[in-house]
Amino acid sequence: MSALTIVGLDNVLSSIPAMLTFVPTESIVFLPLVSEPGGGQTLGPVARVDLTVVTAMPDTVARQLARVFSVLPVASLIAAVITTVDEPADDLPCRSEVAAISKALSENGLPEPEALFVPSMTAGTLWRCYLHPCHIGVLPDPATTALAASTVVAGESIKASRDDLARRFTPSPDSDRGRLRPLVAAAASAVAVEDGADDRRVLRGRIASMDRAVSDVDKGRYPDRDAVIAELIAAFGTPVLRDAMLITRTREATVALEDLALYLWKLTEEPYASHLAAVVAASAYRRGDGAGAATAVDAATESCVLAQLISAVLQRGLRPSKVDELFGQAAQTVRADLGIPNQL
Image (cartoon, rainbow, N blue to C red; front, side):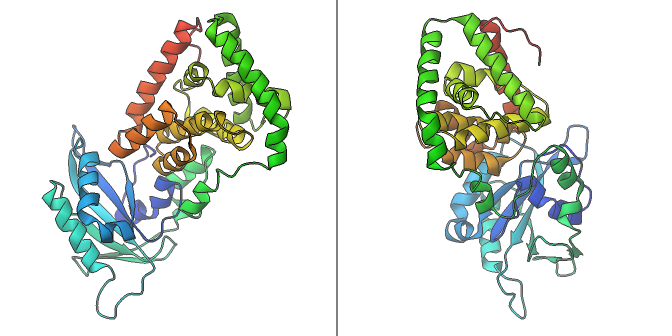
């Protein structure tokens, strides 16, 4: 998530959609507050779990959260229960689920969470604490939080639901993909020959073309010529060229790389599509969008080492900044091996 400091519990809760990049429903969102070496606390990696999963498997969920959070000095934990379930006349909904997951988290070495009931992620919603009835607050408009503003400025969007996030991976019409199919196959054959011959001059040229395409997308210009699209798809489907694109970039350029890969994914099929989905996943995770990364991993339907790596990273909840650093170093090594100076 963003490095912006979020002050006040009302603002923390209303920033949840921007943290997740979609508006959650029927969920429990776990927000760890992590102790900093110099004093004070910051918000750690946010985890969202379907309420039905927490109800069915509280111990399993607690163990997984403990594995993710155990590497962090978690000082306290907030659990926001977001559900439209009707409130009982004399109590808050889902109290038994909250008690079960709180007990399981404590047994796994995590602080007992401060559980808050949030009926919806809309402005003016009254939230309440399960343990302390007098601890209440009102959500400001989630669209006007500092984190939401920074998300929009970076060229990202907040989806209305997780399903909307997954619907990004809707292929283009068969006619478009069919028209491109022979061009992509021809381009892929040429790249395979170049890669097999270790033709570094040509491979450097392909990476330069890929970098230009990212720069163009950052300016709102997507490739529209079939031959160019086919060459880009074939290049991203080649691991050495794909990996060279994972250099450390500005947040805006990372979004552009993600958008380019998604655009190309819609226009192609396997075996190229999974490589492109993996680039989307890596880019999303590096900018702190775990939900976007997860939906992209789901779209990688064929075996792809990069997608598998992002899946493992998601399971372990590694800090996006650390993943960004490691990927950036690896990509720069690939470029250096090909004789490309560090210019980005």
